[in-house]
Length: 167
Image: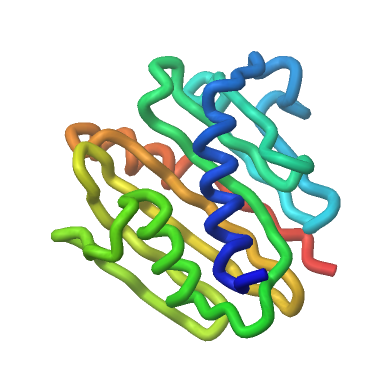
């Protein structure tokens, strides 16, 4: 299997699953906290802002959406393919979202050895992605809003919190 195919599949799966909604009270634990025991992390978020939730394939992540379903926060973990770099993961994200290798007109990125942070715009949406790399897995948070809602992007970035419980 191509080492780049796993992250692409995870993102594609999460986008396709967005049509299968489950109301907040059926998934949300502790009123706005979702935890992944396999990868030892939790996501705290405001249920009032993100009331629609969907578990991703195999329970490895959660897709949180606003009532209008136009804005979302996708948080998931996946096994780390051997040699996958933060730059390659970001390139895979762009390819999955845009369907092309063409770069967005506006983008800002920061890459480290074990993380990356990126902000970019494509068509009518703004995207903010944070990824954390560990020895055998990685965790991704992908925030999406409409370009004309920068205040919502700011609020999501401030109010949704990844809590790492490293082993």
